[in-house]
Image (cartoon, rainbow, N blue to C red):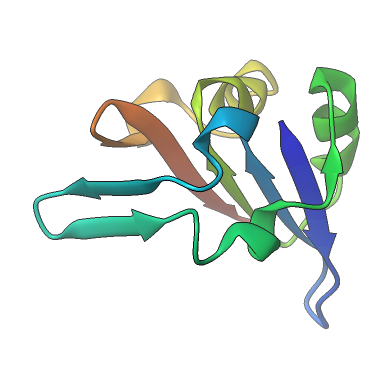
Length: 98
């Protein structure tokens, strides 16, 4: 997975994407996710599950794309499986802390 933490006034924004998805464009109906054009949003460092878990301890929002990335959020119970969206069978979730 790739992990990048963006600092923001409201708090960290955590972006995580399965490595094999970077460079792809996901489209289904009117939904379009360009992981090529916005690769810099996700590419920070290569990370394992523990790195992602640590990053998700404190965040204002999180964007997770891919089975591994979304799986970490689900394992931490930050979201439920019914909250996960799919684009051509690729899981995607946004989580906000208010």
